[in-house]
Length: 312
Image (cartoon, rainbow, N blue to C red):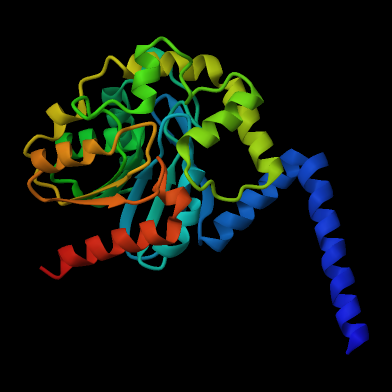
C-alpha cells in the first residue's frame, strides 16, 4: 500500500511539474489545449461560418431549445464556456465571436455600433439556421441582445441579460465616474499590467485561470487596444437601451452583481420598470460577469426562469 501511495504521489508531482512547465514556457500551446479541454467538458465545439463581409468563429453544442449567447466588450465566445457546462444538457448553445472580437474578422470601428452589431447578429442567426431562439448577452452583448429583440420581437422567445450596457439612467458606476473624470478606461488594456488591473476591476472573486491563458488573453487585449479604444468611443454615442426596450413584451431575466464596478446594478430596476415581462436577480457579492464568477448558479437561475415560461 505504501508503494502504491508513493507512486501516486510521484505521479501527481510529475503531472504538476509538466503542467507548470507548459503553463509558463509554452503559453500559446497550453492555452489552446486548456480552452479545448474546457470546451469539450462543456459539450461545445469550435466552428466557423461566413456572413456578408465577415468570417465568424463560434462554439456550438448541446441539445434542446436554441440559445444564442453574445459576449461583452473586449471579450469573446469563451466567456460562455464554463456556464455552458450546465446549459448544454438543456439547450442547444451557440456562443459567437461578434465581428471585431475574438477570432472573428474586424469591421472598421465606425461599423461597430449597436445597430451594426444587431445587423450582424441577424446575419449570424440566418447562417446558423436559427429562426426562433432564446437570446442571452453580457454587458455590451446584453445591449445588443435587447436591441435585437426589440427589432425582431417575433424571433426572440426570451432574453437573458447579464449586466447589460447602455442603461443611461442608472446610477454612475465606478467606470462611468472614471470616464467622466477623463481617466484611463479600465476595460481597455494597453499593457499586460493593465490587463491584470482589468481583471481585478470586473471580478469580486476572480475565477481560476491558468497563467498561460491569462498571458494569451492579455496579449490579445494589447494587440486589440487601438480598435477597442475607438469602439468604446463609438458605443458611448449610441442610443440608450431604455429607448429600445421600452414596453418590450419578450420574457426577460435581468441579472446583475451588486458589486459591479463597470455598470451599476441600479440599471436592473430601470429596465424592469420598462419591460413588462421581466424578472430581476441581484446577485450579492458579485462583479460584472456572473456567468464567469458563478457559472453554475448563473445557469441554474436561467434554467429556472426558462422553465417557468414553459409551465405557464
